[in-house]
Image (tube, rainbow, N blue to C red; front, side, top):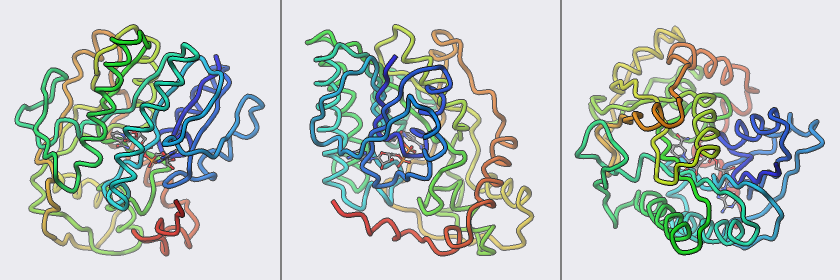
Length: 324
Ligand SMILES: NC(=O)c1ccc[n+]([C@@H]2O[C@H](COP(=O)([O-])OP(=O)(O)OC[C@H]3O[C@@H](n4cnc5c(N)ncnc54)[C@H](O)[C@@H]3O)[C@@H](O)[C@H]2O)c1
């Protein structure tokens, strides 16, 4: 198969490219390098069947491919809120361009959606049938509503044009190659402890999250694309934990002697998150295998191995050098 991975130089995309290459596929990694890095895919250049294309999904592209994984979109709030209009364009025009391509070359396409389509959920855990509780005009809406519209487009191209579509609702994912400056809870806590800084909890730390290790996530979306299931499917780890408990786990893992400090909760921060993965279990015969202890240890070792100039000097604003 010749497979296009948009956002392929990003955190999840680079692991997916690696997985697809290891299965003997040809892979085209398409990225505009906003939050992605060449470094993430440099190890894949040894594969003759791997190609990197610098391109922005908001522009159409002509390629001959059999499958498309549409992952292009910054995933962390500080990155997607940096240029919210661009985030909407990436989600909406990106989906239209990739669906147009899929329609033309009769490729199967998987859209990376998100648990954020459930907003601040009133149903717990979240099942795919839940329509969500999303603020349409808030600071997270560019991402949440952008992804919701990408899902709408997938379903409409499927119904109207017979495009072979898949929708993965991805829940919080972590692992090596996460950006150290993405402001998300896993990287924040690990990097703060490695830098010898106090660990920041937003709010009282009673909000919950469920963290999925990247290898498990990649296996889930890989199986979803190969299935014949065209409705949205949750892919995530149901192991739910409060942020405060999670901070304690990181303290234990890293042995940091720093203290926890509390800061105000950002706007529209969801109070709880836990995927119901009944469908993935039944249809894909998939469930997460990597325990949080195991996954966090690998992630911690990854951050620890980063060059000091990366770990200590890249702050939340270092992506602002991006021109587009
Ligand atoms: N990481 C998570 O916990 C999580 C959770 C839910 C959904 N997702 C989704 O999974 C996908 C991958 O997320 P990630 O964590 O790897 O994020 P990431 O920021 O590491 O990767 C996104 C990639 O897309 C690229 N990109 C952004 N805008 C683009 C554009 N206009 N054209 C071309 N490339 C563009 C970036 O440069 C980057 O390489 C995203 O669609 C995200 O919304 C991720």
